[in-house]
Image 1 (tube, rainbow, N blue to C red):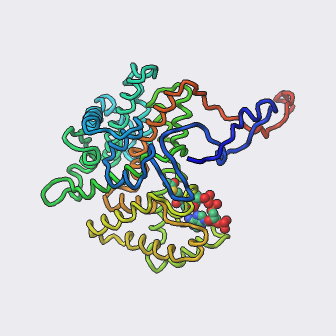
Image 2: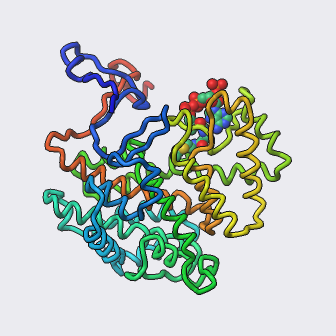
Image 3: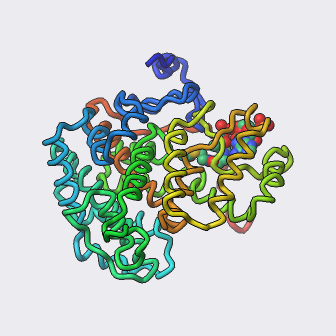
Length: 410
Ligand code: ACO
């Protein structure tokens, strides 16, 4: 799609030198057919399909299938895939007991990293990665189990009994049931069904977060996978990379910022702080490293955000505050000039809050969605017969060679 590339390796190998590009700003770590981003034009394509079309028409598992297999499933293929995913949603009883070992106030992401990594102790036959069909089973298993492990992490953190996955519910409905069954009636509509508007909102959020090419967590999964490590260990590494506030933690940061601003009259003061070059404060949920005109995911999600807020008829002042921040920033010359628009995480945090998802579960929600991308990149990498172990060079800046000094003379 028109990207200009230079094969640095063949250019520099005879010169015995290399490039220093710590942020991978100008270095592609791999070739991929999965996701395309044009940050200037605000384009995001999964396997060539615009995110706007997928978000409007698909269910999350359909998008997961597309990312994994490269093509949209037909009806039979989707039915079979959905059955496989729900069939794999149950976790081994011994694995369930792992949660008992965690302190009651453990962060759900901490439990997620540990429990997902330990899946490798349960599926020994899948660990050699040699059989392509088996690799797809491992990838499907990961997509199936992630909501169960995520919900179990939450239930443990609030001291509630685990809820088993149900085969008769769709992916998002099943997750909401495992999260909130018997502990919150807010997700149930007046006919005692899981509210389909909430399920729709969750489905949309999962689709928008399913993949974003070589972001930090996906690159981590690829890096771990390049050594031949088993898929569950690779995904656990991805979860660890996602946890940081500079990556998956941004939606949580938006909610913390709103709590700090407090009330709508304080918004102009905080906008002024964000513009002050001597103040480190930034408006969380605004700006993006890649999207310099608009984040196409934010455009899609904004409408859903308003719909969910209207539906919940929440009187939480936080939501009014979020809308006040958005309104002020969108009119402000500084934000217009620097092309700082609300990104996907400005709205996703607000929607998750309205859906009663606790703030420390926000990054876990991101992890459930991104699992589809992680396993797809792992599959793509494993299929590459010329794959290399990812081993970046470094620019050594330590001391030159020196002699050992005996301890009594130091
Ligand atoms: N609030 C106020 N000013 C900002 C903001 C912001 N949110 N973002 C950028 N700027 C200003 C910077 O101060 C800088 O000003 P200067 O030119 O006077 O020095 C200019 O805009 C460019 O900023 P950079 O940091 O160089 O832009 P970059 O593209 O590297 O950063 C980033 C993008 C990290 C997302 C940044 O906009 C930011 O920190 N945003 C807030 C955090 C956030 O929302 N992160 C989530 C990103 S989306 C995601 O990860 C899914």
